[in-house]
Amino acid sequence: MRLTNFSDYALRVLMYAATQGDRLITIEETADVYGISRAHLMKVANQLTRAGYLKAVRGRSGGLTLAKRPNRIKLGEVLRATEPDFALVECFMPDNQCIITPRCRLRGALKEALAAFTGTLDRYTLADLVLTPEAFGVKPAA
Image (cartoon, rainbow, N blue to C red; front, side):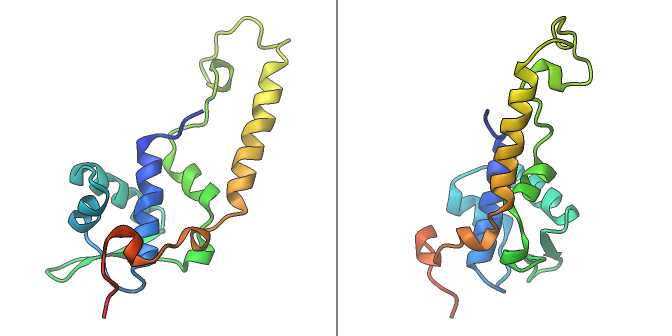
């Protein structure tokens, strides 16, 4: 199993925003910190804003900040909001054509494993991931 870059970037944006406290961050700044595409981060930030994890402030002095306290943002919830699906195998998809699905034992084992994966991530919050600004190569806000 592998998470999409979209989910990876979503978690990174939230981690960076949490590190900055109440200071507004920008897409450009965040893209520079991580060395990733500004355009891609714009899509990520829009999704996180729509999902209620980020708050966008418009205008010349605008930017992004967390919409919730870090200890209220569960990692499992973020992934469910950003991953397109968790279809690990064909039989998890609506258009499943696998002929052994009615008798297959793999599906149950994979569903259990996926539930354990997301359940574990639900026990962690963004607060568990917060680093210091120095970890990002950024000086703390004065």
